[in-house]
Structures are given as structure tokens and as C-alpha cells.
Amino acid sequence: MEWFTADGYWLSRLIFQRALAVVYLAAFLSAALQFRALIGERGMLPAPELLRRTPWRAAPGLFRLHYSDRLFAAVAWGGCAVSVALIAGLDGLLPLWGGMLLWALPWALYLSIVQVGQVWYGFGWESLLLETGFLAIFLGTGDTAAPVLVLWLLRWLLFRVEYGAGLIKMRGDACWRRLTCLDFHHETQPMPGPLSWFFHHLPRPVHRVEVAANHVTQLLVPFLLFTPQPVASAAAGLMVLTQLWLVLSGNFAWLNWLTIALALSVIDWTPLAGPPPARTAPPLWYEVVVIAVTALVLVLSYRPARNLLSRRQAMNRSYDPLHLVNTYGAFGSVSRMRLEVVVEGSADPVVREGSKWREYGFRGKPGDPRRLPRPFAPYHLRLDWMMWFAALSPAYARSWFGPFVDRLLEGDRDTLRLLAHNPFPDAPPRHVRARVFHYRFTGLRELRATGCWWHRTYVREFLRPVSRPLPPEREGGETGRGARR
Image 1 (tube, rainbow, N blue to C red):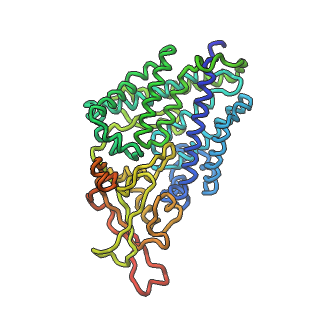
Image 2: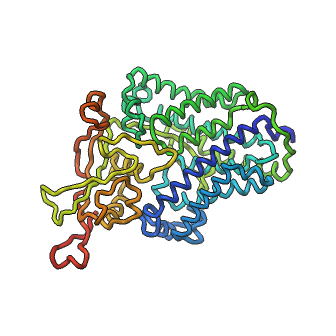
């Protein structure tokens, strides 16, 4: 079937596949380095407990057969190895079926991780990576030209990502309609980057332009993805520029980078790359598989498409346990005030008014006012993100914050590895507390005078001091209290 392939998109496919492999690497690396403290056998939300209380069909995956921290580590580091192989182009050296199996491997491994990730993996970009990775399996490799149907499915996915984000903003917070959201957002976003202070202090008319340009890119430009070239390429290029602006202004894990990869698959690189190399005709079995997958995706797209048209549009929702076709969106509402939960410990035997408290430092979220936010994306700091949600409402932290404090009181090494600064390197604290502070960016004069990027003000108590039991050798001299949540 001559219509089945698009020879001119050989470089588009190559760029997209390598970019997707880099995102896979960031995702597997994040999982490998953080899982023990979060969902390990002794983690804050142990995966084995989840597996015991949920049925197989609700969350199918490799760990349904067996879970151990050793197996999880093998899956995560194995995913890293496969990602590196894909970055190096190993799929192009294999026959078509071998390349497809190689692309199916990271999708299956990461699906297994997400299925046991619980709240730590409840972000929209997890589903986006799985949906994108699933489509990449059928994109073809090596001497086979890219199939038109899969290229259009990638455009449909990119459309839902951008248009869904645009609609949720217009339907959500009035500040998006008034073009005022960026008066606050650069300061209150979950994890600011090193340039966020500078973005926040741009003139307000520039913020209005930022919001207006965002609306154009997310509400109008996505429809141009389905037009002939070079219009579709120009539309995708505008999306790339918008996503790069977001990369500069904050840390959003791999959401922006994966959206850029999708946009790059739309661009026709023929004027730069020249004519495509010689390609073999795709085998019949491959054509049948691609057509069947296309039909499946179109059927599963009914509910996500209906969600786009609904006045009660949901953000970042999956409609099937395999995350094959999902809905997306971000920042339907914007916080006007930045609240942060500051966690502190004390080595004093008894908490008194004059007790000395020392602050734990997180890698990405604001803490020390003198510390400039740092770049981490596409690496995902899951604990830091959830701490942002905890400051919005204690309900977001109900399942994991108590276990987190318990592990600080125990001096758990895996938990402490998630932090940037442990103020108790020799022995764990006797008491831990958490307090909520209001953070705001300082002005230029204030920055010069104090050296602080942030100014913070105490707001309220988040967790009153809790303590750990005394070790056996000290029980005779002091009375310990069990940790209270």
C-alpha cells in the first residue's frame, strides 16, 4: 500500500525516537535512585502492600508476579540500559520485528513501575510517557519508512496535550482569561528554576504577552497540526519555542521535553536533510498490526475527546489500566501565595521554648532563602513535588508524611539520600516538627541587601513536634515518646 508510508519523515522519526529515549532514561534513572525510600519494601508507601490490596486487572504489570527491591532495581536499571541502547540507535541495526520488541521493552518496564508508584507516580507526564512510548513501538525502524497512521496518532496525542492544557486554563482560573496568571505563577509554581526569579520580575505587560501567546499556542495552533506542510511544521515549531520558554522558567520534570519530542515528529526536515535513503516496502504483517493499533487508539480516544468538550473537563486522567489514551492538562488554577512546609529536627531530649531546631534541606523545593533554585528537569524529584502539594493542603500528605517523619527520626539512609542537607549527620534527631511558611521572591534591592532570593514568613504549624523512642541503653535515664503523626 503506497499510502501507508511517509518517506520524507525518516529524519523526523529518527529525531523523535532519540529524544524519546533520552526521556525514558531520565524516567528510569529517577525511579532507580528514589524508589527504596518511596515505594520499596521499607518505603513510605510500600509497593507490596499495594499489590496485596488491589486486583491484577486494576494495575497489571511485571510486579504482579513478584515484588522485591532487588527486582525493582533490576527493572529500573535495566530500563536505563535499554534507553541508552536506543539513544545509540541499536533499534536501527535490528530487523523490523526486533526493533519493535526493543521499543516495547521500556514501555512494559515503565508501565510496571507506574502501576506500583501510587501518589509518587500520579503525575500527568507518567501517562504521557506511556502513551507516547506505546505509539513509538509501531513507528518502525531501520530500512522501513515511517507509517503515516502512527505519525498522525502522534499528532493527535500532541493536539490533546496542548489543547487540553489550553482549555483547562480557560475553564479554570479567571486569571488566565484576564491575562494575569503569570503575575503569580513564576513564583508559586511547584518547583522554580534558576531563572524563575528573573521571569517573575519581568514587567507586567510582558506577563500579559506571555499568557496571550500561551493561549494562541495551546488553543489555536494545535488545529494547524492537521494541515498540509509547511504549515504543520510551523505550528510544531511554535510549540517547541513555547515549551523551551517553559523549560527556562521552571522545572516540570520531562513534561516539556516530551512535548518537544512530539512536536519534532511533526516537522518535515526534508529541506534540510535532503531526499530520504532507500527504503524497503513494509511487510504485510506490519501493515495489519499498525492498522489494528490505529483502530484501537481511535476507539479508546472517545472518552478523552469527550472530556475535552466537557464543561467539567478533568486533567491528567487515564481511562484504561495500560494508559494507552489519556487526557492531559496543567494549572487549571494558579496559587496566588507560595506556601512551603519546612521540616526541622531537634536533638534536645525534651522540647522547650528555647529548643534548638535545625532545618532539613530539599534538593529542588525552596528552603534556605539564600539558595537560588536549581535546574533538575527532566529528572523528577518526586518527594519535592509532593511537598509542594502538602503545603497546598495536608490532605495531599495524609498517606505518606507520617512515614516520612518516622524515617527521619530513624535516620533512614534511603530517605536521607532524597534530601540535599541532613542537619543530623552523626545521629538522628530526638524530635521532628514541620511548619508552614509564606515564601515570596525578594526584589532587586532586597536581594542586594540580604543576599536572599526568597523572603519567608511563618504562617502556622503543620506538624507539632513528634519524637522517637529512646534506644535501649538510654531508657533508664530518660522517658521517650513514640512518634505521633
